[in-house]
Length: 248
Image (cartoon, rainbow, N blue to C red; front, side, top):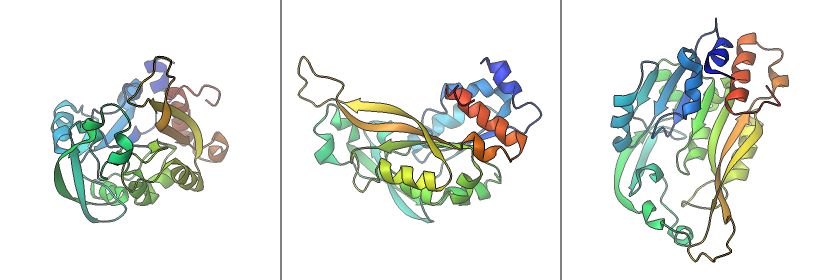
């Protein structure tokens, strides 16, 4: 579906609001297909990433240098050698050392921040409606989900980075996150798998071990049939953006 045709689905509606938590690098390019029918709220606690986001943010984007958690509390954020893997959780060195490039998880410094819930931060920013949530917080997704009840209650879907192996200390793994989101009325629609191979690679080695994935959760069309047409249109856009043409 072309950008103009996809955007036309939302003509006459207020812009679709995407909340992107762990926004280093900005939203995925496919969201740009919505054109002016999109409003973006970016949350990023790493000061190294925030400056670039603020400099590059278009007029439809709000950048918030905020850390999120399950309550208002102090959080120590670990700044790793590779900026994109920085996390509020410490790396699980015993696990990571089995795989190549483990040094990218080396913690080079820390910063103490005051975290708040997603619901609380959205309220302070005056954002009353949320259509889609993306979480990519390097293992800290579970606490953020616990503080996002109001936001999740009104969304059509969520993309959540999930782990199948303990990459970080104290990390909640995929089964528990999936159970929680299904309890919130979402259905698991897709997984974008990521495999790692061990450091000692053999000539005939395969794809390796499943480590993490981006999990897509959406409300089913049936749950929205009695709702507003604008909500159904937003769900249709999500199906198309994620190439779920059998559902759109």
